[in-house]
Image (tube, protein in one colour):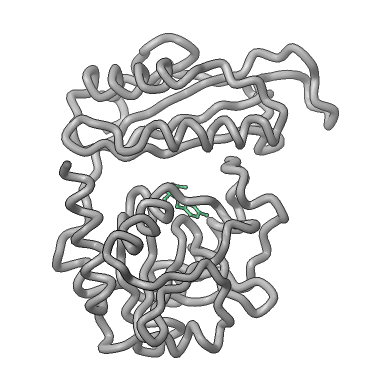
Length: 281
Ligand code: PDD
């Protein structure tokens, strides 16, 4: 499947098999790189400006000179969709520090490597969303800079593996007894009609999270950006996850216990419907 793909590498569009990165690229050696995943609906990127802004923040945090402006980012996304004949797609864009002999000090004047890949994707169906998913909770073993979108995702990958082994869809991280986020999505829960989500402190500031906060405000649903203790979370009336690929997905079970009616709750479905309208507009 990948053979057919045209990908972007450092200013050129090349067949997948010809998109090669040197073995001493610092993302390979040190996870010294950042990324974004942009969802495209009907050939149009969803909130590309917000993704670019977050990419800039990640780059600044790593003192990584970003070799593309927003127009270039938009151009790459458009070109990849065009060349790969895609409408419903994700575009993964990664910027690495570049290649140099392995040493911990950051070498000056490196040429960053920029790669971008578009892949077809489908939104979860209404049936899947209504059914909801199961999650487990795991200790948040990640570092203190989770707001930087780096490619250093091994704790997330291992937590996801743990979920898979336990027959769950995903794992939700718990830090100091408080729910933070899931391995590749943000987490919301509903308790007595109020929606809670972790504040923007050492979590990934999700673009979908921000859109959902806007939707909640529009719908007049009370919402607090407050961390929720695990005990409350397990007893929540509703739980949902938000992410670029997942969109808005209800949680039916936590650690094997049923959430609400054991399927996506009414508030979750209202938010999902409003979110889908935004994707379509
Ligand atoms: N992940 N939290 C984490 C840890 C994430 O990795 C992501 C996104 C999110 C949701 O952010 P957004 O709404 O901007 O997608 C929250 C992407 C999709 C990924 O790694 O593939």
